[in-house]
Length: 359
Image (cartoon, rainbow, N blue to C red):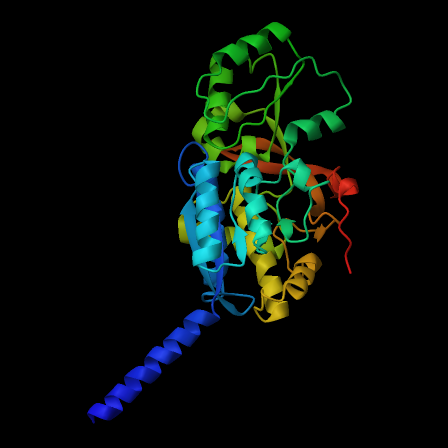
């Protein structure tokens, strides 16, 4: 009996080890602390939701999600990436929120032969001349100010740049008051957006100078924090929680049920990133080590994105639709409402500089 027990125990250990080794490890480096911490939380939680919906799998392949906070520090992100790749042997890295962090760590990830699939950060140089076959973006190219100036047909009377850790915008607001523009475009994600918008209203500027913003400057969390200060603000996004396609409706319902909050744009991007990776794992049977096959499967983007239309341009950044949103007051409850489409099948301006050749 003792010998039988020992044999059974050995077999169990062997089976457990085999099951663990069959898991595909995905390293998530994201900002979970500081003013932008909730964006990282939403990316992490939405990605984890996609895994939970498949019972611990993506694309039918068992996965292990490794998550660490970069604290918005490029040096910390580099250390975490090294650990994920060298110690954990992860071949897929994702999660980074901010472009300055991604710019510092991405070369190390690509040099190691790993794939990086971005749920948010997307610096312009990596969309153009520095594009790479193992670098995919599931969000949108993030040079918001450059994009605004490229599309805006009027005169830009001033450009004012702030810091990622700034808490007092009084000097900048004084400059806006002095310039007397017809409108202000501002890009402050996360907690920065909350602080800027509150101070903008407190300075008495909202009554005379309208504000237009991209999605990171007015998401559902910012709206909840600033309340009526957001009324009248106009914004654009590639997704909103009121989208009526089945994938989005299911995502919003499941996210709210699990986390008891409305998902932000960041959550939608984290979820789409997970579903994109799932599509490639399914197509390759989880064999990420076959880089050519896995890369080809990612390029096909064979999944239902919550934003609707989604495909990759040659620089492996999305071609997608863009929508106008506004703040609605439904019986005292504020929400972001989609008001119309502004761009159809729109890609970024840097793809022309990318020399990647698809087979």
